[in-house]
Length: 171
View 1 (tube, one colour):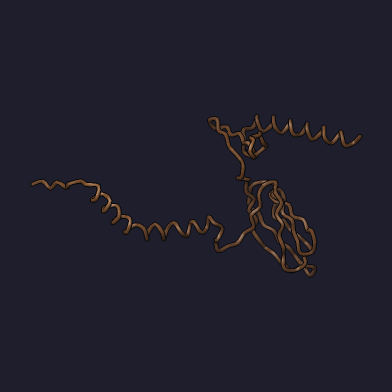
View 2: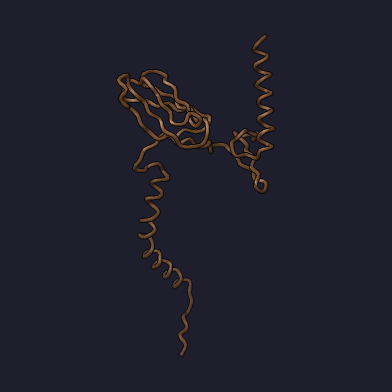
């Protein structure tokens, strides 16, 4: 004897509801901790800076010395005794240590430098990427990771433009 189930939209919905009720706690237990980490609420704190952007960081005690693990990733300057300015140079992760006048550490943090994501459009032609800054009109911009020939062309144009601007200021 064959058993033949009768299909109806109601039975399908009921089956999905039962499966959802069973799997929802498992999914929540797996996804929520990952979402919290992605949202920056991890157990270990870090400072985030965007490439080519400055970020002001206030510190609790007066700073005397700033040590940057990899200065090619982030630049740090002391604006005043309790204010640092971090400027992202390249994508990457490094650290920053701030010492007081006695040589005691005030700050010892990981710094994550990431790329700008606002108002950028990436155009892919097979494996080659080109980046446009759109606010609201789109214009070609120089971004690490873009196709080499295009990057070099735009870099040459920017260098020539900056050279012209500097030579006008010399008169």
